[in-house]
Image 1 (spheres, one colour):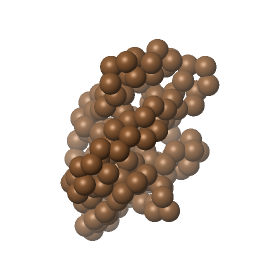
Image 2 (spheres, rainbow, N blue to C red; image 1 turned 120 degrees about the horizontal axis):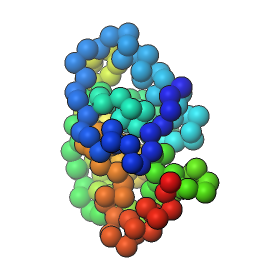
Image 3 (tube, rainbow, N blue to C red; image 1 turned 120 degrees about the vertical axis):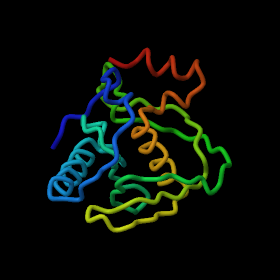
Length: 162
């Protein structure tokens, strides 16, 4: 299990580097990320959230679980959906639990990339899974969900973080 980095850590604001080797270390990292995500009661976790600057995320949302290495995100349905969203890297100062805010996301996306062995994967998503994929890809680009919020909502969240 790994420590989850929180807002203020520079790794969360730095775009991640592509994975170039599909080896035993990558498979171990994916397993550790899944373990860390489950221990934190998350539905997704990107490698930068554990201090690893690699383009990789894991997920378990809406009855689907897996991982995507070097993901590419395509918006299939750009209709904006507002729903509650939180982040393991944006905990409340008092509770240590993720802070939630209604966050705009596209209704439907497709993520393409590779699995732990370098085989191509492609997953179409709507609802929570779509939101999860967009959230995790943002992490790989050095963004947090608060960056997608209106200024007043972002300020509300940031005032409650450590």
